[in-house]
Image (cartoon, rainbow, N blue to C red; front, side, top):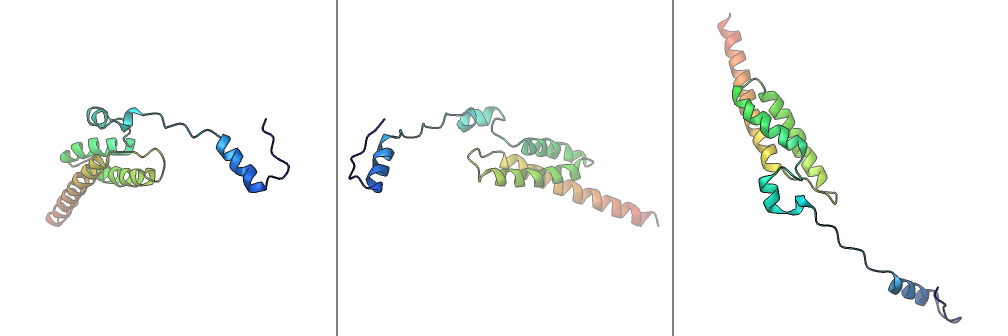
Length: 121
């Protein structure tokens, strides 16, 4: 318990209390903070980015291309939203890969559907 002099001002009392409080503890190092671990394992990544990356790989088959496009959009949104928090997510490369392959596959799929509809007439 700390006793204050009877003539101490409120500011002096607040300064004494501030001097008594310990500094905040440093943040515990997380495995997702290590670049080497992020390169080897999908730690700290957005789950949406991982899904977009795999859907982008399968978008080369064309059928899941719209899914890769949607997942890529959600992943970019999720990663950008997490940058405003104290636990940011990584995986923007995978998200953009899913966006790009999803867009190309969807464009190819739409073109093929249009050509098939025009040749059917």
